[in-house]
Length: 266
Image (cartoon, rainbow, N blue to C red):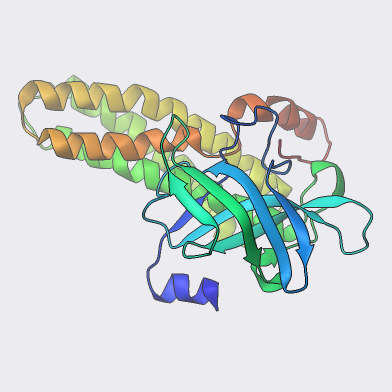
């Protein structure tokens, strides 16, 4: 019902995987948030960061270490936390976004997505979820960058070499992202598709790191676009580098996957 209301009500979901500011060893599947058993579900406590949209969100999506059903230890579990939950507070900011504090937040079982595989490997549900996360964040940030580039293209005071140069880089990145979208449409929701989405996401990050500063420089120099609009687009683009998993943490995992091993998230 919660997920349906998000789709039908055009609600905002924020992702709370950015924990490394408080917990450097934390990862997507090794969160610092902890859950304890409760007769009505689990109670979650700890601190994470939203990576953006913390104040505007309707639902917080993140992972938590929860007791296994067979009581043999803990496992990473994806959870959905309604923003109005008692014990959830959001405040402050930092390089990784707003600080979200959970103090004994009660979650019923149906807001927890279990069945992750051991040793950081991904089951079908988590593979699909993280594939969609990469594609949506990549597409959103690329769309914001395209908004900046479009404004440069429409200004004939900008030299053609600058306009075409920005267009070539942006369209190339867009074509790569569309390739991932086609794999999703073909229902190729496996580890190979997730790896493909990660390659493209990191490529797009590099592309936008070149395109956006140049577009901002040209737009500010000409005064053809309001500074507030430029700042808004730029802020949206910056969010891509903050979304998990970070490239630095995935280098070894992707190398192992290319050598024939399973894909793990760290």
